[in-house]
Length: 308
Image (cartoon, rainbow, N blue to C red; front, side, top):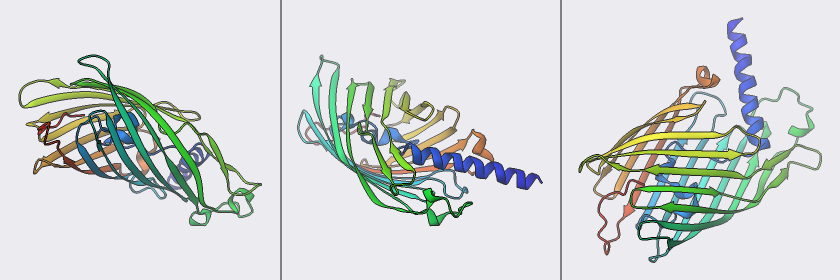
């Protein structure tokens, strides 16, 4: 009886997640977002004054059938003293749905004072959605809303962001896309709603010694139809090479993060999320893996990480 009860709870919980995600398309969120900030805020593009390319893989809620699985590849950098350009691609799979995001970003930097800069970024692209209802188990075979698959439905993406920063702090507000659209499987079936997401980020780097830096940071996400999501993190950088820290996503997960820089230009990072929600009994946590390559500005002779 207990097994059947837990199975029912699991199926109901998973159904709620899938339906809420499909009705109000949620965008991918990584625990190690601080290493691909451009995907959160296009205003970040080019502000590091170096060329960066990165690859991120996330396996969420391992052990749960139909759980999210995503990959992110991108490149961004400064092309002049004031202009930054970047490209970003995300592939996200959740249950019966597959979605691919492709966008480009550009940012211009302004000096508000000797110590404060503002980077204004815009982004544009497309996302392509496919849903194969046959890949799951249907309880009501005659449900008209599940009779027709979605094949490569495209919608445009137009976003923008403001990114304020100094030598040891940053703060920003952004939206990856301002366009709200409804995509249908057919004229009589349920809509796939894409709603506006708002992100708020901030962080400060404390230099504790010549060999140790400490950075607390916060990420907030607001989207209609979903609860406010808030990530807080605390990371240490040791000898400009080793990173380690903790993070907490309110009412969702507790995370451990670690990373290493090697051969000066390569960074490998890993994080593990422990679920603290009601789903913790049905999954074995989530994994983020990031690999980043940095080409430093030889003219500026920037050889150590800025840590954001």
